[in-house]
Amino acid sequence: MSESYPSKVEILEKEPLLRAYTKVNRYHLRHELFSGETSPVLVRDVIEHKHAIAVLLYDPRADAVVLIEQFRAPPHIAGIKNPWLLEIVAGVIEEGETLEDVCLRECTEETGLVPKGLFHIQTWFTTPGICTETISLWCGAVDSTKAVGTHGLANEGEDIRVVVHPITSIRNMLRDTTISNGTTLIALQWLLLNYQATRDKLERA
Figure 1 (cartoon, one colour):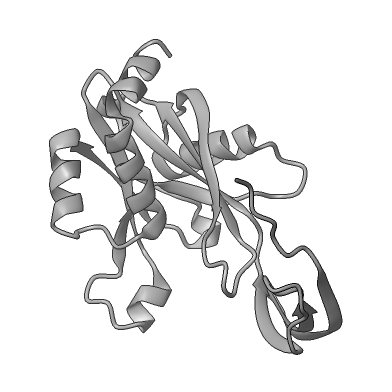
Figure 2: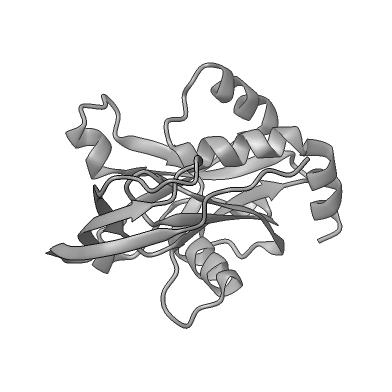
């Protein structure tokens, strides 16, 4: 049995609060309720951020995942003991770029690797309560023996170290809460849930 959902949203006012790399706007709005009535006027501050991609790099022959480590200022400011986070490749989508183009660009910049057999997994909102940003997650095959050194763009202050973890290590890290980056958690949990099918698919890439 299908259920009906509210569909009406009315934006009454939009106040710009910040104009920088990220825009922040304050919205005054109201929307239809599940009951069919209309909500009171709500005030919501919304961070309007560019959308991004993330790429899970898997080596099916070595049965290993290529990850990166880099410093993140917000975790440091939040008081995290080690703000050099373990992550998968990710980057912002610029105007005019295809998602595949961004995947290849970011993988080259952050790891020096060019993935084969790229395929899309899922897209989601990072923080839907306050931010418009979405993450488009992809997966591709790489040769992990070539995953060495540090990478990144100097003009963007990037200092990114490439690391390789066998799938057994990935399972252990997920159990002991080593990973604190949400996108990385989603990607690695997805890989374990779809492990054999992904390995078979990327072995043919």
